[in-house]
Length: 274
Image (cartoon, rainbow, N blue to C red; front, side, top):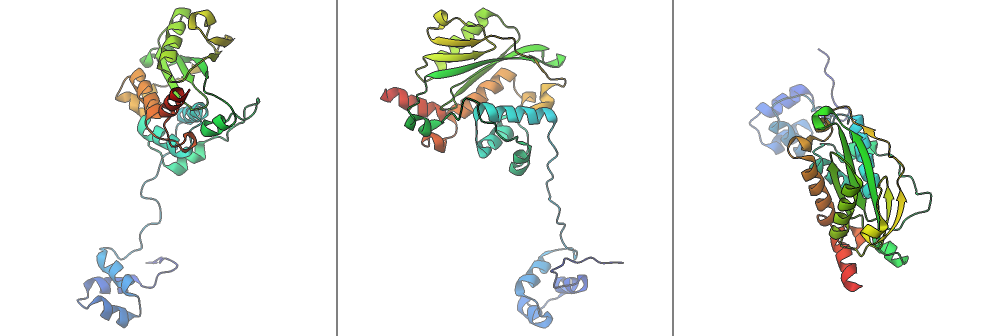
């Protein structure tokens, strides 16, 4: 039988078995065989005489295409660094993936055509203030098990990354206005204007300046149950998950670019100082 040894092996299977069965001390065997004490001890602790496999003990399966799209969308929305995104994917969404695997699936970031938007402390140094929100409406065509047509409304304050999201079964101007007022009440920043994408809102009703892009948004098709894409949804309702993820991101982990503060604490501190 052909025996394949590691290229740097200093022992054969016969010597390894001899080491395991011998009653001599480690130092005696080291001197007898001309090998290091470390090598003697390594093989005396093992039961087998073959080299360990070099393949990883845990092999991470490739992510579904829907998961890749979702994760890249989250990265674009939150502008989160890799380690924060990894925590969100693993703990928030319940998708088990290694850091290297996640990084492999991330698309290169594309700079805004209007230029680079500063974040956190850099934004403050550039004279920018967190007074503006971006409000989105994304229609979803889900699997029938998830209710079919749904509507994702989400908001983000670009400088801190503070976010707010809810999913609704139906949509109307009244619901959009109610949700927008809920966002303004929850956001700790002094919001004076907002850009809306896919929402029909009234500036007078909200009391802030609006730049409306109310063109119909293209519905995102999700042909499989959400639980197959986001495992955590098999344990909790979607709005509860959205609220927990937003709360965790807003209040959970301090970010270096925000002066070692969470988005919530960063905005709270600015509002108190103004």
